[in-house]
Image (cartoon, rainbow, N blue to C red):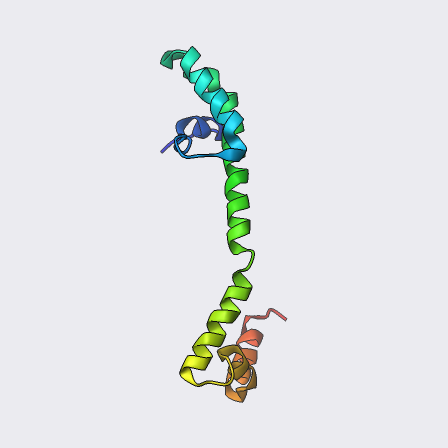
Amino acid sequence: NCACTHNQIHLLTMHPPLDRPHPKCEQEVIDLRACHATHSKIQFMACNELKYALDRCFKAEKEDQLRRANMDLGEKRKNEESAFMEAMGHETNFEDFLAKDKAYLKERDSAKQKKSWF
């Protein structure tokens, strides 16, 4: 167990590999490599601010990648669902079927009332 502060934990973690391209973080990678080259390993804290800047850049890079990957996820799901319904010979999707199923709606409403505090 470690009773470490956030900054101390941050010191214990390594950055991702710098060998793969990071176009948006190129300057931060260059700066960190230069710092590592000019400071001995004994002065491991000398490059912390550059590492923090690199970590922030990597985080922004990953968020951007996830945003772009999930951008058209809803459209992909609709297309897959349509293809599945066509292949299975169904005319309605599962959500539409449930929306019309009286027994399901009754159970769903009953479950909601049980969870409600009011």
